[in-house]
Length: 533
Image (cartoon, rainbow, N blue to C red; front, side, top):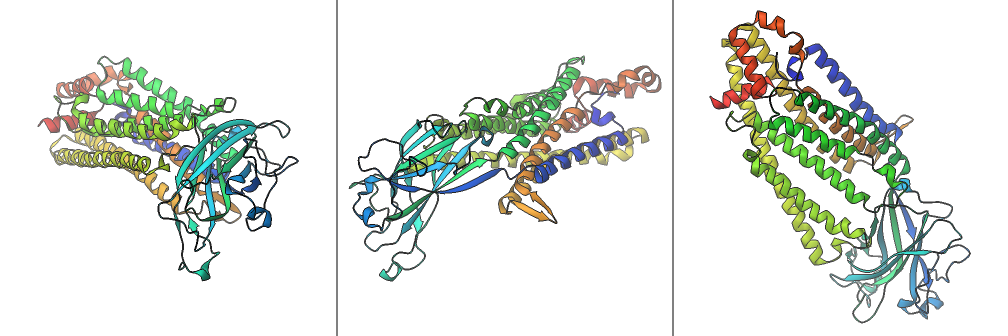
């Protein structure tokens, strides 16, 4: 009996296999919900206002034995004698008696301005704030600070004032949107020092209002979540790699050459293995600032392969034999995937690629950069929408094609009718599982955005965000493993070849030979014959 494992495995074994996959899926969700902490932590730092009368490039510490000369409020008499260019806002990361760690993987920082309303010093429309930002590091409390990055950046300052702008409301604070400051793809040192200056002259930082304080919100990945995440990748990597190698070994020992569908399943396995490779282990010992960019590339390769697999999987079960096994038949759908991926890659390089040499850079820091970034995102979104429109149309055609075959089942002999009915049911079920995986990704993403990050269930605290990440990651690994395993060639017929040849007629033998020569599964042959008719 030729065909794939999905068609030759008994129903009992398929149920056991499905139950095994379900257990692993539930376990991957529970790992994130019960074991892993929240994926990220956000720590708020109040910048210390240091005095630098000589405006030198010396590093100013907010606390400690070498702390700078400070003013606590700009309303103090001392502060009124200072020029705005004499003030440096200093922040030490992390807080006292704490250390940063490579387990944090990355570090983001955003600014929050406290700006008081004054009738004679209001915030102008579409104002741009110029920031002279410097970053230094050290690995013990006694060493000198080593300069890491220095850049002068511009950011749009968007603030609103909820009450009327009158003298009675002077002193009330504007509500300002957070301003992105920096993004680092590696946390290789224990201590960081940020010195910010807002240079002021006739053209720079004019019309930004009366700034009272600056807060920096530092965001990094939790070390506990990193350990759980890297452990999952370490487990899944050899599993998917061995499954992919086993699949291609089975394909290679067949008498016929592999067809397009089998090649794209193999490519899907390779892309999943590439996504799983736990390079993060090496980043613990090396200062690799490109890790965020590399992780984006891993995800991009996998989702591109997944989208190509979906379109080819549907198309190969839709086209007739003369059109099958030709990648050019899907040129515009695959072209949309490649085009959208390239657009997102260019956008990622324009942001995180520049961060390799300047973490303070932001593509959103100017109107031109914002327009270009939005253009890339919109173009990629249009490509995705066109792709999914084409995919939905093909899925409907496949189900309609299968429905036509179902109508012919009553006219078939009972043995063949039962076999074809089982094959069609299993094919439809796998298609529905694919749609369910895509839907669950979207649903979990929405829940992740609207939830509070954790749920309390009795004495237990469930980390929703962590459960979402580990659950979706486990789901796609299990989906790829299921495709690889169930669509691998079945060798069951080799053991029963002599027995089957004695009990099958010429017509059945011809059907088996045709299936083995033309495609990987019986459903593949059935749908192709229907399209041909």
